[in-house]
Structures are given as C-alpha cells and as structure tokens.
Length: 353
Image (cartoon, rainbow, N blue to C red; front, side):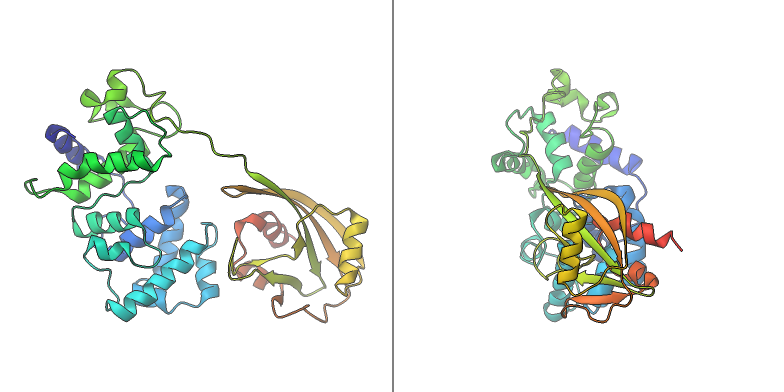
C-alpha cells in the first residue's frame, strides 16, 4: 500500500472511528474479549452483552474463576458457545503462566488456547501497537478490492497474498508507525464504507484514488466468493414436559453442538402426536394434557433446525431420567443458559401465567 494511502487511512480512522465500549480503553483484556465476541456476531448485538459481561467479569482473574453455568448464561444470545469456554480456558492458562496478563508478543499470543492468528494480531496491534497483521473478512474485502485480487476470497492463498502485501507496512522501515490505527482503520472501512452487502460508498473512501476495483468499476465482482454447500436441515421434536411447578430440562454433552447448555428434551425427527405420546410414555411419564406449540426454526452456520414442540402436562415429575436431566421452575428456566435456538419457547413461557 502506498505511503500516502497509509497516512490517509490512519487519519481517516482517527477522525471517523465509531464509539465502542471496548475501544481506546488501553486494556488488552477489552480487546481480547471484544474480538472473541465479535466473531460471527453483529456489533450492535455485542455491545450490551459486552457491557454486561465486563460488569460481571471485569478482568482475567474473575473470568478464570467463573462458574461454567454462570459463564454460559452471560454468553447467552451470542452463539458459538465454544468461544466462551475457550475464553475461560485461556484465562486459566494466563493466570497460571503469565500472571493473569496477555503477553506483549504476537508469537506468544498465537499459541494461547482459543487465540488464532487474527485475534493475536488484533491484540498485538490494537492493545500494544505491535507490527502484527489482523486479517478478517473486512480486511480481505477492502484489500482484495484495493489490490484488484480476483481469485476466490475463500482460498487460503488469497489471505497469504494480502499478508505479503502488508509486510512493508509491518517492517521496521516505517517512521513512528501507528499499527493500531492502521489495522482498525481497514476494519472500520470494511464495516462502514467497503461493506459486505450492498454497494460500497467508494466516494467516501480515503483509498479510492488507488483502489483497483473502484478505478476499474469492478466493486461488484471483487471480491469473488464461491458459494458454500447448502445447509443440512435437521428435523427435531421437543418435549416440554412439566407439572404445575417444574419443567424437565436436559444438559447437553460437553462436546459438540451447543455443548454444556440446557435444552428441552427432544429427538432428531418430526414425530406425529401419537408417536410423541408413545415416546413420552416410554420415558415413564403419563400425559394428562398435550398442547401443540408453535413451530420454530434456528439457523446455524452449516445446519438448520426445524422444530416442532409439544407441551406435555403431567401430574408430577417424580424422576429426572438420569444425571443429565434437571427440574426447573419458570423463574429458574429463565436463569439457565438456554441457547437462543430455543428462544421462542423460553419467551412463550415467560409471557404466560
């Protein structure tokens, strides 16, 4: 990138950056936490969750000592719950080996639990102003347009090409380099001007004079992104088994999709009402009243759940099947770490008498 464009970009960022609760705090923990939360999640959804999380767990020590269920509850609504588990795992590691602090070293950051090259680069450059690349989807989009790279943006070699082109800026030849503003400036461009959906606002971009895609009217074709395979659709039937006081809930295994979170019991199939009754009776429950609840759909990255649900009223829940099942009253149901996949049903009960 031309030196004049580097200067334009950093000046543009310093003058136009949006206010974020984690921005310019001088705290590496804030950078780390926000970058993990922002993976696959919209900024506006992250802001209130970040503030609530920081209020409860203000530092690495409190995160390391947090109870797993409490951690999952704080993370509820952000999805990709393995990120929260990796945060805690890394916090424990930092307490044991780094005195509860994120190391001021890009290479050391990259080998910490749950921290990959992008997050390491973000922490190193934003928190410590170190010469480290932080290449996410926004950076790839901005720079493939700037350099006119027409190959599939999903290919690893495209990321390698971008990293090579940034090497000059990350070299010691730069005078008083502002790596933090440079990296954040490219990200900010990608989020606000060189946007992923819709037409980019190229006339407002500080890099437009030397942007290949803009100068050659190719912003509609660069970047090129191949299509992902179709999502797998999984049919599910939920059994909301309850008596006058309690609901039966199940804690998912500690590995796999939505690991360690709570759900209503169910099976991976769409059962008819008679099939559902037979299944519930096989679990040892005698239905007194059955209500068909609204259907729901939840979309994961590579999977869709299409859910049917039945409320099964029983006289009294006298057993919980095994150690992975629990009883929860209506108030407790709202305090458990139940993923947003089941939000339609948790909301249903929070609004009913």
